[in-house]
Length: 150
Image (cartoon, rainbow, N blue to C red; front, top):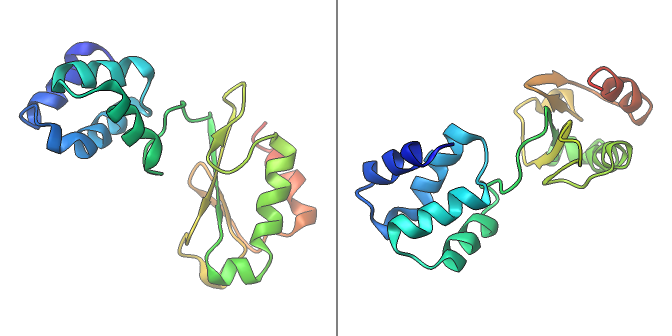
């Protein structure tokens, strides 16, 4: 994202430091993530210490300070899915692609997230990859599902 677009978003929020969270969300929506250069520009334009901007971007789960992978895997860990073994599914997927929830692998092919609920409670455990739900997934099926996206 170039500086002019970043500046547009900041200007939309009247360059107020009190709008830091919302303007970071708006910038992330356009760019997909918050790079070091973006955080530096926000700090400069708002006249807020870079440390505060970085702290905000890394504190809240809503922000991404690494680019998303080509494929985003969301594993539902809501009550219904959790009680049907979702944590084991999440762990197995993480082992397969070599990352933990909230991370993106080195070649940026996968990002892994654990979600509280994906809204398919009767079909759990549910794994959603790039918006496509894979329901009633078992540990034996995990390898096959992931291979479809490699």
